Image 1 (cartoon, rainbow, N blue to C red):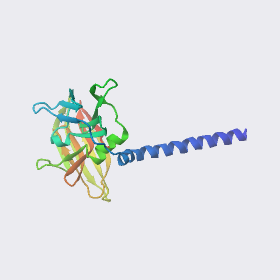
Image 2: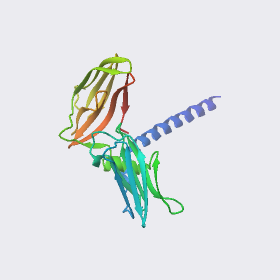
Image 3: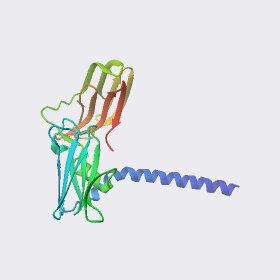
Image 4: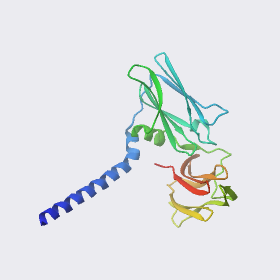
Length: 248
């Protein structure tokens, strides 16, 4: 009986230790694959455009070996963002290109231009591209980082007084709360009696602030060298306070 107990304890210890190592490996994988990834020279061309009068349509054209594939997609795009910051191209093979696009909530969506088994060109939405591809697009090429302009107002506190959402009218407040240590701050958000306090790490060389996107939504951002990285989306929707984490 004692032998079985010792075996069970050893098995549980091994399983827990393996899970911890796997979790650590997963955490490391948010950068490791991107560091090792090497893009290749394209054999074709991919162009991406956004109709001026429409903020939801994306036009993609894939050209290769004298063939052309054109396809349009509907996607709520990030607002108040320069076109150059809306997408990135990553070629993983001479005839294979991933297109990362910045969505309205400042998360990313990926599309894949490739050649099928019969030699036809295709452009499709993909759920999650290979780790090396998205890490290279976001960590190396800066997809998700937004160029600050003269019109960009980075605040420490924003308040939308008497905001009506659903049947509720209340003040929507988001503010940065400094801490004794300079490497982190608290982000306080409040609406209609509901409130949340978040911890935001501030890497060396970064400044933290809030950028409003209408009266009912804002983004917590880290600013470095004129580039903004969105870390949280904070919004009021249907009378409720909502918070989305944007960093992977």
